[in-house]
Every structure is written in structure tokens, then in C-alpha cells.
Amino acid sequence: MTRELDIIEDLRDGIDSFVERWGKIQRNSVKSIQAVTNTLVQLEHLDGPLGKLSEHQSIRENTKGKLLVNLFTKLVPSLESSIKEFTKLMRMFETLRQKAATIQTFNESLRGSLEEQPELEDLVGFLDLIILSVHDILNMFEAEFLIKLTIYQDLEQGSVDVGVISNYLTIWTAEPNISNEDLEKLLKDLDEHFDLLRDVFNGKMGLRIPDVYRKVSF
Image (cartoon, rainbow, N blue to C red; front, side, top):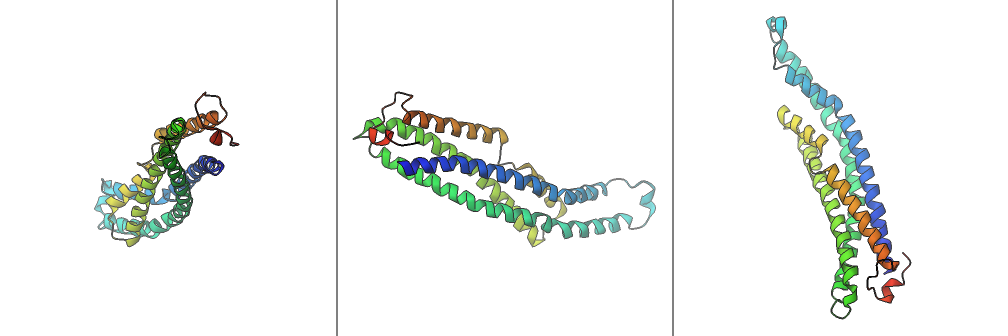
């Protein structure tokens, strides 16, 4: 059981580190696409009135062409370094997922022993809560990574029109699959479940845990 408790603690610390690193990469990526976003805004403004400049032949088309060249020159490079960093971070994600799978497999083995050792039910329940919180957090970031990867790969092919690009960058910046409120609650729940598990092994909750599991240094 010592190994499993170590893995749980590593998971707790690892998720905090993952979330922190993700946030840093995202902030940097938003800064890197700022110039591209500004160009998109300029392109949109060109569809509006030009005042006296409208008398100048082809000025709208010439300006739009120049801005489009500028846009596509900067677009993919501005996201390339970010997607590389996100991809590297997802290796850490896979490690966290493997640790969660190890805990889930262990918990299923405990669940299979409930008929002979019903006192394990409380331990199984707390581990279920921890596994559920971890999966919810990981699923949130996995969904967002897949969106970012799709956006990057589509833009890299260079066949996307300006309207789609604008929406892509809006989605990239907004990260619709990550709710800060939900994430904060999930992290708080994970900490609470972990603290409850610690209290169980420290004998503070009066729950029935076999001695073979209780005699573990948390």
C-alpha cells in the first residue's frame, strides 16, 4: 500500500505542476498571437467606410493584400512554438494518466475483496473520489489540447479563410474546454479527498481499516 499512497501523493503534486505549466504556456501563446489578432482586426475594419480614401482606386484591395501577406507570414510561426510546448507538456499528462490508472487498478482489487473484508469499503470509497476528481481534471485538459492541435494543423495547411482564422484564434485564446471555476473546484475537491484519506490512515475518523493498511506511513 505504501507504493499506492506515494503514487497518489505524486498525482496530487503532479497535477498542480501540470496546471501551472499549462497556464504559463497559454499566457505566452496569447501574447505571441497578439500581432496576428491585430492584423485580423485591421482586415475587418477595411470592409467598413474609407471616407475620402474610397476615391482612390484599388486602395482597399491593395491594403487588404498587404495585410493578408503579413497575416499568413506570422500566423503559423506564432503558434508553432506554443503547440510544441503543449505537446511536450502532454508527456507529463500521460504520466499522470498512467498513475491514475495504477490507483484505479489497485482500488478495483480492493473492491474485489469487499466480500471477505467489508471494512475496506470506506477506503475504496475515498479512492473512488480521488480517481473521479483526477479523471475530470485530466479530461478537461485533454479536450483542450486536441482543439489546439486541430487548430494548428489546419492553419499549417494554409487553406483557411480569414473568418475561420479569426474564430480559431478566439477559441484558442478562450479555451472553452477549461472552466477556471470548475477547475478550481476540482482541485479543491481533490485536496479534500486526499486529506480525508490521510485522516483515515491516521485513525482520526473512526473508520474501519484493516491493520495491514493502517500501518502505513503516509
